[in-house]
Length: 156
Image (cartoon, rainbow, N blue to C red; front, side, top):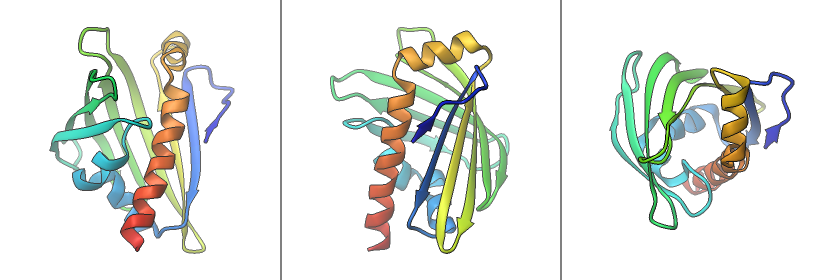
């Protein structure tokens, strides 16, 4: 769920999953998993490259239900398996100015469950507000809900 954050240039999401931390971390770093949940409801994601290492690139396209493609590219800056991920991100419609932010994801084990905290930090408060206007809060919440479905399937 998205939480209102007093930091103007940040979107903050938290969610607790009934899944072990290693599985949740893998869902963020395996193209077979992430393609099933990354993006709002109705979207699919095709990963073209995913090198999960510092300096490695994640190159993908989210496909909207209306046929619009949203290319994205991340570059990993920190990986502490299975505790943390950090990556820069540029994405948006191919014909629109791209949104740029930094993703910081933590995976905290709590009694066999995993708490995920996702922070998206934008260069300015205005950039964060533009992302909100484009639906980033709802889309982020939907993505994390979709991740719950993928984790339930993986555990079954």
